[in-house]
Length: 268
Image (cartoon, rainbow, N blue to C red):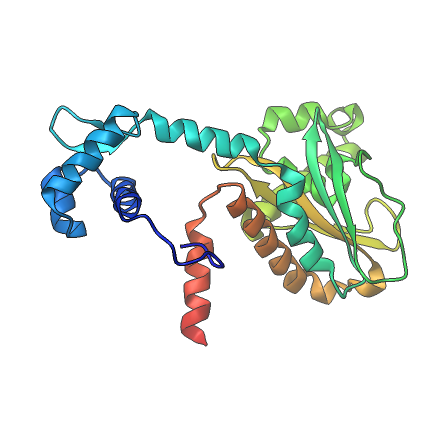
């Protein structure tokens, strides 16, 4: 039950929710539900019959019940009503509160990462970035994180022509970018170490939707003195965790996140 709600319940509705939760895990017969949930068979039959009429569940040829298309409609409407910025903003605010960092949220528009939100921390420095501003894919932490969700063909098409054609410096830049993407794949976060502007560093992480696709990225921007290289791994892990929380709120189910939390709980 959600926190902060009053302890008023409708018994029949509670039983229906118990049944739907059980069916979300596996197909079950009336007998299975009666045994697992300790519900009277008559009550179970009436609730199942009602849910079936509204296509919330359906009966399989084997006589068991499973979730129906009505649940999918609810799920799609819920997912479509989500707003990326509204979902991510509280997490960005929590991350930068009391720090000299500035947080950014970015999405891929065409072949370019574009900022769709910006949250400033408590530092005196204000970075000259703005919502709607594009960033280079291969020289920004948000770009490197977004590139994790791109195919090799999409990456090559998105890069400047000279990176694909020039055999010397351009080829090295492409090689470095591919190494950066592999770093994101392995560690879960990206690093931009004064590649775009001297004296400024960024660390980012990919954000996934309910299908597991990379749909956005977040990052923090800081002066190099406020983000020394020795902190890259520690801050990177924190950013990865924040991006995972945003992904979870967007419907992404990451078993590794739950496992990490369980391990942390066991260690305390």
